[in-house]
Image 1 (cartoon, rainbow, N blue to C red):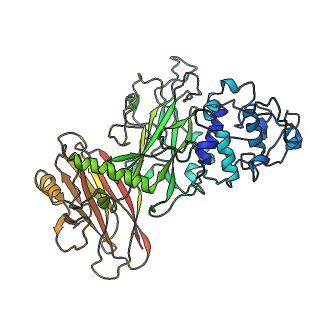
Image 2 (tube, one colour):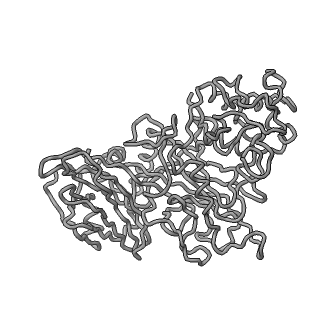
Image 3 (spheres, rainbow, N blue to C red):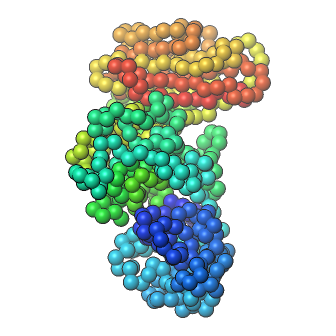
Length: 542
């Protein structure tokens, strides 16, 4: 059996057992504590005295110097001080470990006097959960370190960013009238996002989500064995971790560990590659101690005011592909999608690329305040744009093309979905890029019925022309348009009944040398001109 996630299932539960990063907690290097409890830190597993580090003590403190410099974790659970003292708690030993002798001066953890009221500890070691057992399995399994490694996800980076985070506008400090105490939660759509969005309490947003949020959100696909960012295409049978940054820009801590707090719950959906939203499949939470568990809800135990933290989900390529195919098949059955001549959804999906959407579904306690949008635990089709701080999405995908030295290179295709935004109104898809025509030529394709019903009748094309000389089509029944001038645009008539339109972006790369050429984006505009979604491709001559 695979290991549970060290960082999201084990480490973050241990944080929760000790207060969830709240001020005054005894393992977080805060306040005026004379020393770290137990001699180790839970701020960051790679802290000098973190779980991968060594035990320390302060002269005159309660921790005996005999343990100073000893590794918190060793090669086996039986010889690892942290596991020994946690296991001793499960055995009911108190107040100090009695065996083996080398740990006899280390106190049992959690402290035996606090176990009865430690809800995170008790839930993590009952009802089918076995945190201590999972820790043993992980240590004896070689301690694979899936702590997220990209710079944007590092604890040091998040700590630096939160130092400059502004509190939510319009909310008074809790020590001043009107004594409003409220957590304000958000999923980051860019590094340093402070959660403010257009319409919040009537205050103009100084730091709203960027227009191309799908390319800037700090949501990463990681190697579960190393925590490093995955590069390149997704591979069948492989499993990856999805990590995303969430924040609290309010003036009150959030989560069940906060006074009067409610559970912070977060979910993540894989979606068919799209320009806003589309058929989706829920990803399992990496907080599941059982690595085969499929429960989709990630609970963040606590989130102090003006702070960031990470949530994580498991991305199994085969399961995601099967789940999206099933969701797409339902859309076909409901007459909400045209496969463009393909016999199966699987065939259409092979030309696409999944994206992920992370959204918070619980944790705010003052839903009566005028914070946009009003709280709703049901993720109705929505996009982060500049208004919904509870959602972030990442669509950025690689687009490697073969090198072509001839004058008419063949396009490579990326299938995507364009949803109807608004009822009974037109939408626009605009192609944006800065590539030279000598480097790349751009195409857009759609099924013939889509072109006839929603473009020729009630729609329009600009800087695009229909062509018939392209032999490599993205799907059998395709009308293909080639960009004739930079800024190709399709105006789509309202398609409320056929909610999702299947299209494809083709790029023929003519560059003779392997190199990154730049980015190309499809921008989805609502009827009023606002950006409703989109995606960005990195164009690379392979």
